[in-house]
Amino acid sequence: MTSTGKPDQQAQPTGRPPHSLRTVFPVLALCWLAVFFDGMDVTMYGAVMPHLLDDTGLGLTSSTAGTIGSWTTFGMLIGALVTGNLTDWLGRRPLLIGSVALFSLGSALCAVAETATLFGAGRFVAGLGLGGLMPLCLAMILEFAPPGRAALTTGLLMTSYHAGGMVATALGMTVAPAWGWRWVFWAGVLPALIATPLLLKLLPESPGVLHAWGKQSQAAQVAGRYGLPAPGAAQTPAGGAQGRWSTVLALFRPEVRWATPLLWLASFSGLLLVYGVSTWLPQLMRAAGYGLTSSVSFLLVINAGGIVGMLIAGRAADRFGAVRISALWFVLTAAGALLLKADLPMAVMYAVVAVTGVWLFSAQVMVYAATGAVYQGSERAAGLGWVTGVGRTGAVFGPWLGGALAAHGNESWGFPAFAAAGLLGAVAIALVPLATRLGGTSHRGGDRAAAVPPSTALSDA
Image (tube, rainbow, N blue to C red; front, side):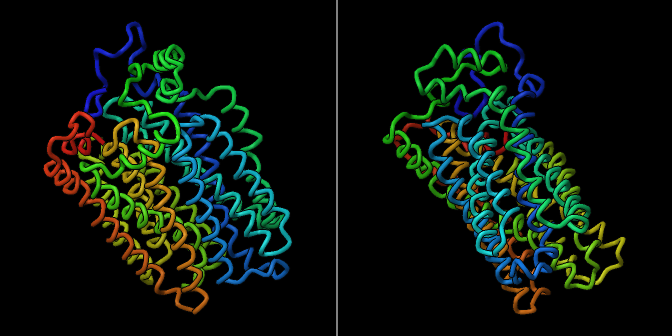
């Protein structure tokens, strides 16, 4: 692979199928299924929140609910950091399968919980698996993505998150009122029964990881099957504990030392929005005077908007650059969050919620696409792990903030707080190209071939 992130034509095996979305569809479909259940598990907590608060036997208050939401995302933070740094050692495939099994176990614990403490423990366990899954799937998709289609492939993958969110919302609207909220969490056990066997049988291992393990023939076989160029040094993570530490240190090499914290800040803002809104939108709308059913249905609508947004953002980012689209989407999210505070007719409010969903979720996903362009192949899994992991602090803060505002009767401040997060994310991601240019021009005498030129890489994302 060349320094611009384009496949090295001379390194490609002969007789391989064309590298297109069609050839990598099996990997995309399997990761899509895994992320579908991720979105379902994350969203079901917000979808049943009103029922959890109404269940006096569980003993959940608005403040405790916000804290448990933060426990979930704290587990995600740990899961993302651990898997992001172990995946090049243990492999993408076993860790991804283990992540699915882990968040299914967490849902089962929630379904049988009789106390808020045990329920919170279940959400923490689920968070460990959920946090590990996302950077693994993103790393797989970016490795298998066709040239010039990284953002579109990422967007297609993330439509599954919102499809899962819509299913969870539908369960919250139908199953929870009829049979109780516990049955919604029992549905969260399905990934272990459906996705795990398929992943075990069909998901390939990363060619770069196989190459790092010394399995060159197997790496070439997997690469040829999916139309990928044969993995080389740039796509191969260094082996051993020293190699894993070197990969982390590479996130602060001169060319990207300032871009890395900016990506973390953008991810913090984006995940604060994603998890804050997913957890508290029904309750905030209920506090604004909307009925229970309509309040939960807003969660369904915003996730539907998220699916549309992923398709729009992916195509736009492949044409104009992931950074530009992410920054614009963050600004539009801020505007939408402020409109959600307004007293609007029901039909207009549904439209505002849907359009806000178009921008909100894909703003964060384009941060991931930009991350894949900033770091070279051998650093990408660790880079994504740290961007998603550090960003999870925003996912911890978002649900806690919503709970704190609700506990003090200040729900009306929720949407302005989300708007501020959108503006912060826009500024952070917009500065990434400048940071990489400054890092590149200030670096003298280093290995320039190891760096991804920001002007090409970020526009290709």
